[in-house]
Image 1 (cartoon, rainbow over the protein chains, first blue to last red):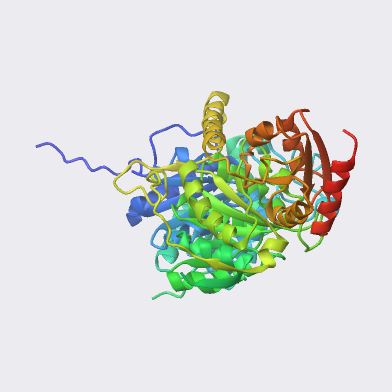
Image 2 (cartoon, each protein chain N blue to C red):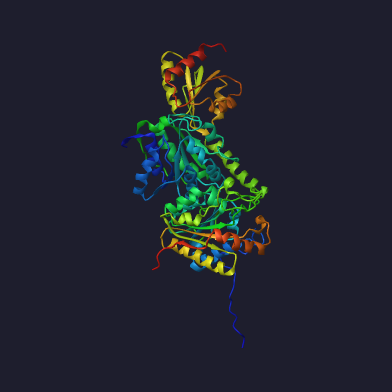
Length: 251
Length: 352
């Protein structure tokens, strides 16, 4: 008798069968996949619209098989707001990097939360500008070397890295705010849970939801992928603690 | 039909609602605040959404989102706010998204002032933001015309999948006139198959402006340019007034054209043969009208509330065939009709 084979792992339907432009060891590919898995599990592929603005995030529409906007740098929350206000029944999310959300688009990032837009944001924090070649980001750590902080970031000269999850958790319209990471399998599982919870928060109409994802960028950090994973654990997580900063009450 | 007594700003807002606009995103700035104020009470009555954005930068990107979602959408602002929107307008033109943007011009540069001006002509007609594109730009000279052009603006935006600007000024926005809202003729617009509504039962749609492959980007730009050439061919609107026997032709648009008409009446009463050419579309510009008139008329007087911006387009049309004088007031100063009368008389009396 032939043994029945059970399929235990497959490409999510929402993830298109194409190679990504992400560098080896980059966390973006994992995050994009998690979003695709969550969209599949919630059965919302045909009613979801994504917005990806400038940065390594921008080509997300190449990977997700959903309706998508490409937005100007920092403006994804405004674009998402326009879409959601026209179609309140759609599930709308933004997928933004740290330069985008925590620097050029800070006003939009804060006010989408303040308005309590029923929109979800996936915020990829890799502490650097990846696409433009490794310049200092708003989330670059003190002492971290980048092409525009060649001696390492000095707070007296370049200020301090900004913690967006903590900041947005203070805003009334935000319903779910969490920080996760994709540097270990355990963290990836937790990140997926948080992303799913964020989408569910939107679907329930509870308000704005945001999941920050700490992500490794070996190319711009000039490290091997394994060293990059260590760097997330040893340098990023202590400054950017993981966990839920705001969550709707259960039940 | 009953006439209503309204400010230009309120009339533009009501015209937008009657044209089917149900979404308005904006940020306060004088002298256009009556538009968002009107929309904030009117749109909820018709099941629409008024949303005050955190900035003009956000407002124009909300238009990007709402237009991409298939809605008729509008914003309004003035000088400094319109400058902040330029990046977004470039993106809207690049993504071929229809929308209507109202600029109730005030004195600049910088923060400038809150009194009327026409100093944003270059910005409005030559692109304004980065890259190769144009808005279609309509310049009303009465409150009634502001109504008809606003209604038409939505159809033109949909027809060309391009941003359309209503270029008014603080004078037109603030003054009250009786206006009539006629029944709108239904215009057939192409089906919006490109909107983002969730990829249900169809391949996904993408709204984008990044093309890293220059071959692909040139193709997009050629399509944008094809539409611009179509606008130039089909959409030029211009009023000529008493030009047939004119010795001098005044060129003015918007509220200045209105003042010029008074000056022309006064001059005609004195027996001075003077006429007016008034561009209604300032992009596309009525180059041919000026070119033709320059065959018969030897003197033009261009009057603007700027240091001469439309003047450059008139020089391009007249191409040296006639003498062109310019009279401009700026900083919020509006020319009185007698100033235009005096300038015309100087031109009549002056040697060739």
